[in-house]
Length: 216
Image 1 (tube, one colour):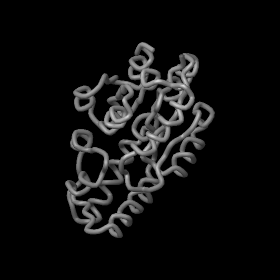
Image 2 (cartoon, rainbow, N blue to C red):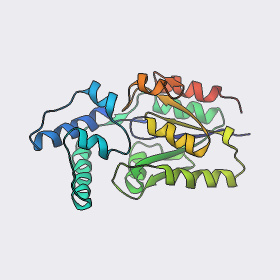
Image 3 (tube, helix red, strand yellow):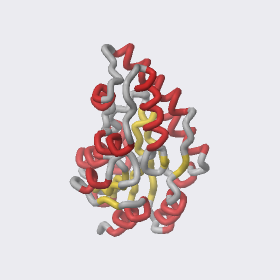
Image 4 (tube, rainbow, N blue to C red):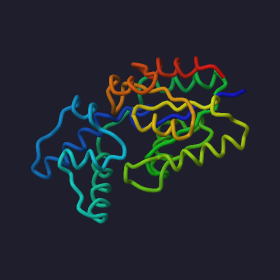
């Protein structure tokens, strides 16, 4: 039996939490609001993102306005410095050596996900990348279901599959798919929030160790 690892991208393999916070604070200040701190962000941020945006004063009154906000976010975010989690390459190598098949399931738009992964020279680690068709920052569940159908068709069973991510939404996706989940406390959500719902590593390496220790 082969283990299948479904990695999240933003906040998990890509260390972009500061970039995301800086982007939101730019948008808040543009609207005359008060910036938020990292502790507040990691204690409250969630997917889908729209309720959180409402909470911090970035409010859309209709779909057209929301589309503009989503584009604004990604335009500002693109200019902010980001980097891989310092353990990403070692984790992907370790999972590969362990014989795991690796995938990415992300709320990021498909073309942006593909270009990001290629930019960091990581494309060769993954069997496939599953992003969304929009900039909404919404649920990635429908795409995850498509990936599950593919894996099931290849003979995978739920116990062969583990989701690794940095958000409560990753646990929600895993639960909806009927597969296991390990979370990483280095990204958009605090480790304390995550540990209430799933096994949680303080680092990416610890999270991978937890995932690889799950019995097949």
